[in-house]
Image 1 (cartoon, rainbow, N blue to C red):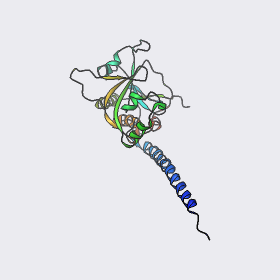
Image 2 (cartoon, one colour):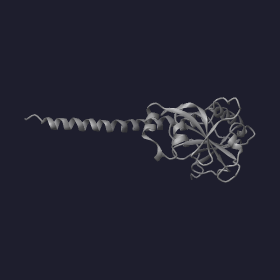
Image 3 (cartoon, rainbow, N blue to C red):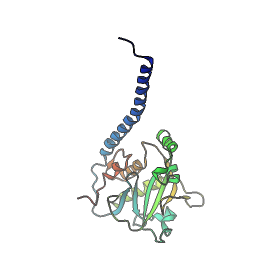
Image 4 (tube, rainbow, N blue to C red):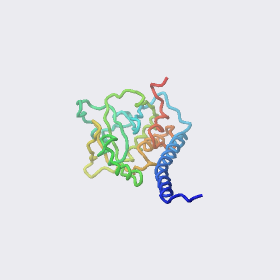
Length: 240
C-alpha cells in the first residue's frame, strides 16, 4: 500500500488540531455548567424554613444577574444611612424610592458595559483568566411587585440583621468626610459604589448573592455562579 501523500497527512493533522481547539472550550463549558448545577443543588442551611412573619425582601434576576431587594426603612435598618442615594428622589420620575436593589459585580462591566453586546472580548477574557475588581450596584425602586423575576423571601429579624451586616461588610470603610463616593450607572436610577472582593468565574455576582443569603441563615446552594442556581431556591409567585 502506498504511503499517504505528505499534503494529505498535513491536512489531517491540521483538521485534528482545529477540532481539538474547538472541542476544548466546549468541553470546559459543559463541565462548568455541570459543576454549577451540582454545586447549586447541594443546600446550605438545609433545615431552614421561611417564617410566616418577618421582614420581606425580594431576590431578583434578569436571567444572568441576581440581586437582593430590601425596604429602605424597616425596624432593623435604614439604608439611607449607608447609601445617600436611597434618600433622594429618582431623577427619572421624581419619586422617592421605597426599596433598594443591591447587587455585586465586576467593576469594568458595571461601569462601561451598558448591554451584553457592548462587552469587549478583551474584557471577557481578562475576567475569565484573571478576574476583576468588585463593585456594588444599588438600584432604587418604588413599591416593586412580585413576579417570576422578583420573588418574595421573608426573613426573621435576626436573619435580616445578619443580611444587613454581610452587605455592609462588603463595603470599604467610610472616607474621612463620611460620605460614600458613587459612580453613575447605565441602569436608570441606580448608583455604583466601591466594594470589596474580586470577581472571578468561581466568585460571580450570583455567588455573592448566594453567599450573602446563606450567611444570613437562608437555605441556598453551595456554589451558585449562575442566576438559576440562586433563583431555584426562592419560590416563584407565578408558578402553579
